[in-house]
Length: 224
Image (cartoon, rainbow, N blue to C red):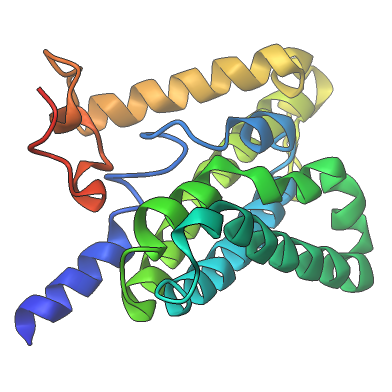
């Protein structure tokens, strides 16, 4: 019982730091770089992605023994697109300003590598509870990464944060940080900081041993 509980806790927490989809696995780069000019946009995209990830993981896990293997990819896409459509309607109806800010990138959640990757690598192979916790953990990790990027870029590049004006910086902001080049620079600095804090070193050999998805894939001992 204790072992099962520890396993569920691991599924929940792994995506926050150890297997953070953005800062460790480098997935979902398109929305990460595009919408993080403001902290609020980062939160909005992160939560929207978490909603879709949670819903699709639960449904795919529940239907994993029913969906034929030959049509699993189209089935996954239909399920994911349904939740994207739903969150799009909700944001447009209740938070239209955020809906407009996210724009086309909200629709592109359908093809987000994080969501499809978790569906294929985890939800289709594990139970509903574990898949739900995996989705929540990955969603939280993704949201934190986007919020952190959005905060840094908004503070330095616009001199404000979440509607609050930052003294001194607001008078002479570094506009580079709210431009595409600033997004790449900020992301690189955050990834470097995370690697430094976690004391992560590049693998000596390219194999499943150095892949954060090796355990979920179940092929850790197959690659040479």
